[in-house]
Image (cartoon, rainbow, N blue to C red):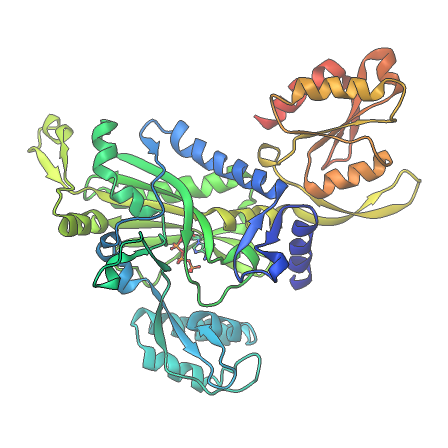
Length: 483
Ligand code: ATP
């Protein structure tokens, strides 16, 4: 699987999906750029999420809040005090580790039973913030630093993950006045706008606010390509509900979100729920949707019942009322209700989802060649048609006899409706392979027969089947499969 994962990484660079950031300067750790195909695939996944949240729900609206927020936001939210991971340094190698990652990596070298016992113990100690116990656990298990092989550890400490920067050019006596944070989650941009949206949109509870955008975390150790980045994108939705109904909504959103991943094209057997043992300070229930990556089961999305924690804290710190006046309670014969709504959150990392899609669609396989009995290896991205960056490739068989002109007309007809790609160089076989490698689901070839009967061959990336269809039917054929 390590080899497979390495191949996926180099494939995504070779074909313009993902590049290391500032690569000519040897890159910046845990920061990546999306290339010409990656940017389009990422946008298609984002659009699929945005549509399912906003267009398909009458009671969910989308916003786009700024990355910079008033610094008090992060005091109120608890991030200044609590947004940290326990870390430990190896004194000899001077390497720094996130404690849970260090122990998990060690657990992988043990038998299943030993590994499960170690992880259970670790989770128990971390849940109790027992850092002395955690250090003992590391020492008792003789966990070593993978590089130097030594086991000379510092104490366990908390490391805050927020990036900060200076804001504006005015100097103040207190330099802290100019500090702002790069948001570590998009959720707070939704909470501080709760009343703006509720009032201006005349929203009635239950309702949701969705947002996609960049978030920044100074992760202790960057690992596994775009799985854990220091700059990444989140897609979050906060659903505001009546107090007391939150666990019902939590159960509903759990199922809705799992189904969404299946609708995106991820196989059910590679998805599962994982309940949190340690609840964050704001939550009364929390679950992860996990995906089976090439490097094991890992969190893909978090669903949290956040209670009224965030709105209550913002009310406290801003002195602005965060209450909702519930007319419907009156209609139901109950007393008028003014309350701070409870919140159920769904939060998924767009880059992590991108990696999920990529690792699920990447295949190296043997396929028959034109020569009878012979096979060759092809690399194919079986991307779901609805999110594939390019839906259709159009090839004239040769560069002459008027074939490029017919192919050009087909491009003109299809281009306004979906992304197409035109190519006339190389053999048809090579052109097919390149489209397989970038995940284009359909290729159309214009040949000499086209001039006689106005039909073309359309080739299916996954089945390798080719059929002749009328030239005039190509656009609708693709549109039918995208829907
Ligand atoms: P982890 O335990 O892996 O650090 P988390 O529990 O802190 O993640 P959340 O705060 O719940 O993550 O964030 C919601 C989602 O945002 C995650 O499920 C993940 O998809 C994504 N995400 C979080 N941190 C990163 C990161 N550093 N790089 C890429 N995606 C991330």
